[in-house]
Length: 528
Image (cartoon, rainbow, N blue to C red; front, side):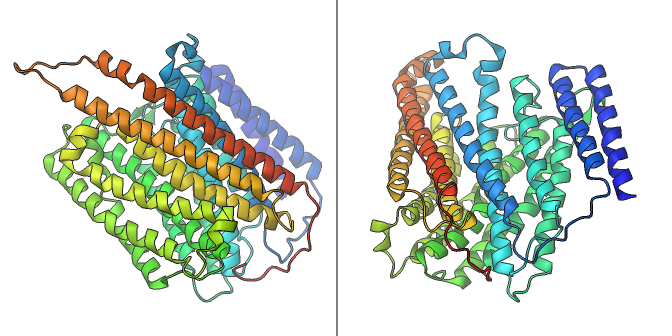
């Protein structure tokens, strides 16, 4: 009976998507309908071919197959996202590289780049590492059987739908929340299943204690669900169109958008990756967390404070002053728990500092924690209204974002991948630690070139825009500031090339490791 329902369900979906492809009002919607129709058709064929086949019961070990798939997706999407970033960096320096085509224009490639790095690279890293960590720290396999595979494939389908939509001009024009309504609905379904798998695994754990990394991952999953649903509330123009009308207009819409936008940084790019830090840094350093009590304080302070900080993105706008000041105050206070977490991560190496000379993976993890500390100092500083009057709308903000995204999120993800691949594929060691060192230095130099060039460019822009003569007239036109920033844009692009080169080296190193000779498989144990 279950097989009948599966076949019928896939068949109905294929028919519906065929109708959507026929009646679709715009190009992106029709393309997505054709893609989904093909997937539903493939699902129908699969359901027919597997009908009546007895289901093999899952073994008692950890479900690492889905983690392996997540690691592969993370590495591949990372290279794709970094490549898109390099392309648009050169487009800013040399506008003729836009090629005069809508699909290759900066306006369409920029959201492709941000979504590929944040959601494809970062999101797959979070899903893969959270599935790995929760199993080890709970001494239990993932709950829900094939539900974890649904999360993986469903999430990557969301990435494909979003990316192709951007290239075809389908966007609701909300930064970091560009996908249209039906793509958002699909992500909501996937995210609810993700939450169920994660919570179910914690509930059936065989370890009495819930390790702090799981607290951070759970906060990331729950908060992102809330942010995603509320920020993307919209009324579709038609069931056959990708267009929708955003529910919140004007200044209310701006407030909701940056409540979402800043907390996407706070919980997607911070809380989730702190869960990675609290697992991989102690494991690679072979030392316990410096202060477990401090990690708990860090968690609750982040949970309470971060959610209020969004208004600092809207200084000197129509947002009421009290809301702007509220966001500024909470942003400044955030500096203390953030640095508490950074110190906790760095001091975990107490007694193991000598390993930094010989272990490039640990070096990468430690540098990522350093970038976390730098970004969480710079962010509160830039939220101060007087500082923000200089930095807002300039490249300084771009430099700040990338020092955090590449230095903190990128480096800790690289370190996690280097840690995971030998263990997931049962190899004695990585293919080449020398290549890890090359990757480390290329990435570090690339980040320094990128961030420093944007800091110089941003401060220069802010000063040029506010410079006035004796009579109070502006001295520089906007075009003057664009021309003055050109050398910095070239340096930024070169920094991106170095960072991309490091990621390509990593992809090769991981591929060679996975294809190497298997080592002795170890028996799964708690908190491996």
